[in-house]
Image 1: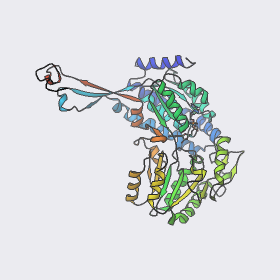
Image 2: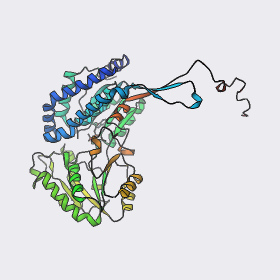
Image 3: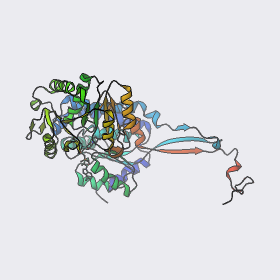
Image 4: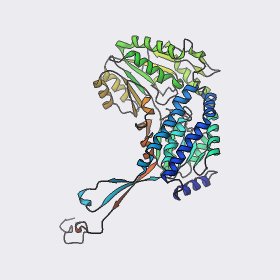
Length: 453
Ligand code: NAD
């Protein structure tokens, strides 16, 4: 029993009493969520600025805009997704009709991280409420201005039996995890993901784990280097590299490295100016702890771009490191910051071999004009998802399920995948009473008496 037990019971009772289930009510709730977000937009953008120095452009394009698109997509498709689906039956089931019903789980716990504190809290919440569940949301303590704004927004506009925000850090999170939820959706680190799964096992609660890892970006000698440099720089340095699907490192064909580096430098200057450290629209590092962890990597290899830091402002310039090998500590863990190490290769087989020695990445990117190369990489490396000739963009399509594999996570969401994640599929077969097939009964003439045991 904790201070949350009674509320969770009330949330479950509401779901069971069908209060959250009629599709028209769920659509109404999604519309209400969008209009409340619109009303609170300015406050949310200010909170993101306070927590992470996020520019208004980034706040809109990487957080709030993505959430609006997801809500609109759900409003458009929810009726059709929620309908009972008729499916075929085999010959042995002649006379039957088979259906799949979508059913809400009940009370869902969503635990979200700090790097996109609005998008990563609200996007799963959309799927959960659209499927008819109630939600307890626990955002990150590291971005507290945004957590406070979200808590206020939900408490002022929604019933707590429907959506409730709990603020706090690991201790609060642990208290919540000890409760008997019907579903747990976690986004964060692999370390905490394991704790979440352990806690969920006690109640056999199903989980989705959206975790991280080192996402490679492979550039081969057929790639359009100008385009590659621009897209990689954008994907790596947006949010100061604090993006779960940011290209963690580049693996580049040795022949084109020099030319690519020139393009990359040009692009970074174009995007952030000659002195990015002074750019007031550049996202900061979330905490001193993360800042100190990141600057340790700057002693690795050779800094060919950036490298300046400001501990007071928690800023690290967009940085590129060359002469890096797998033995450097920048290659030992997910970087999650604006530092881009570059590895070189001569044969693609080396890349496939090295990446496959390590945990399955959340994302993988290929820059190449060769379909053969892309096919070979996709078929020989296991990873969550990714892009050919782009980075990150796959995440923002509601038509593509988003999630990891192995240590980068389990389960997926966005669009229909979210609806399916937060719904139990209940299979129902309706049998005819007009006739009966005798064969199935062991006591009839045609029984299995001839079978010797
Ligand atoms: P984190 O695991 O430290 O924290 C995530 C959430 O878990 C927070 O709400 C935090 O309060 C809570 N938490 C922390 N310690 C806990 C504990 N001991 N018990 C229970 N709950 C606890 O992760 P983070 O630092 O906020 O986020 C960074 C990580 O998240 C990176 O590894 C990144 O790749 C990953 N990530 C993944 C995705 C994705 O969609 N797959 C998105 C963003 C971030």
